[in-house]
Length: 363
Image 1 (tube, helix red, strand yellow):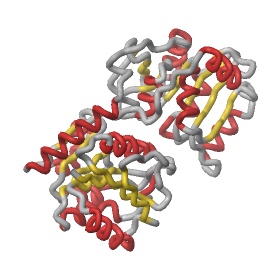
Image 2 (cartoon, rainbow, N blue to C red):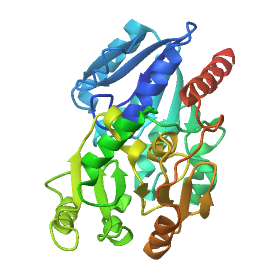
Image 3 (spheres, one colour):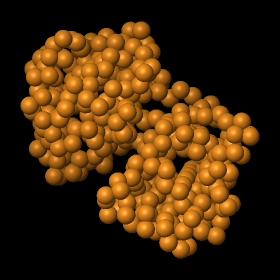
Image 4 (cartoon, one colour):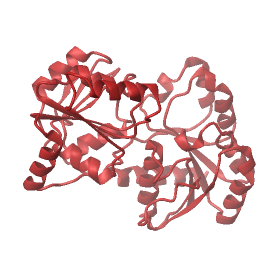
């Protein structure tokens, strides 16, 4: 079976869906029944140990002017399945990703799409373009249909869909005690508790709420992730970090390699992810923190309270008082080993995809 994954972003490009695509590709390629190709942007050249994954980093800009390149790759590599990821940061505002299903379909290829996010009414035209083509859908969010705007439900008409859960794109790390002590001391400076946020610093992430949830008398905040130094939101985060009561008590690392993020999570007293629209099992960042044993505070529209198994506290969106209370109650707790969590989740995800592809090809 030959599967061509299409993603606008692929490592070393910084994008959650790009990281997802890399993990999926490598896990699929570990099965000798599957050959995997990646069609991506020119900057998405992958890791040196990409294994059996063949990468085609050929797209300069995802506009219709690049259509011929796509056709040549599909014709030359001759996949059985063309599996397109939506959305990715690398696509930008280009139209090409939205006509790719039609191109692949007209070339007599089976089309699979993964929708990582929801769609608004403003996306009607793009949604129409990818929905009119016979294809199978994968969702990483549970209850996707129920959460889609009622006026957009036509997009799912007569389409077979599968919910395949997300997983951590950050590896689990096992540090010995001396390394933990040294690393934690390095970040803590003169404070007592290490509070961590990691990921992109966007308004939807609620990063500014850390300054209201954490305690400047005891806490050192570490913000580890991509930050746009030109953006107004980033300027506000920098401003709050540089004045009292937080002056000298906030470290902004910028982007870190995944191994360094994993080590940071392994020594954090708490990881706070106060998403403005609520988090859930589709958030790879929550999975990454849980995998590395950290106590996590996040928000949810459907869950509430402390989940002992995962060591996660789910608060109401924007409720900083609840999150402060959760921090004081559970800070420093580490998750114990659990056979359901401490497994190779990507192997399970790859098996689910293989089953979907096999059934689709047999029709």
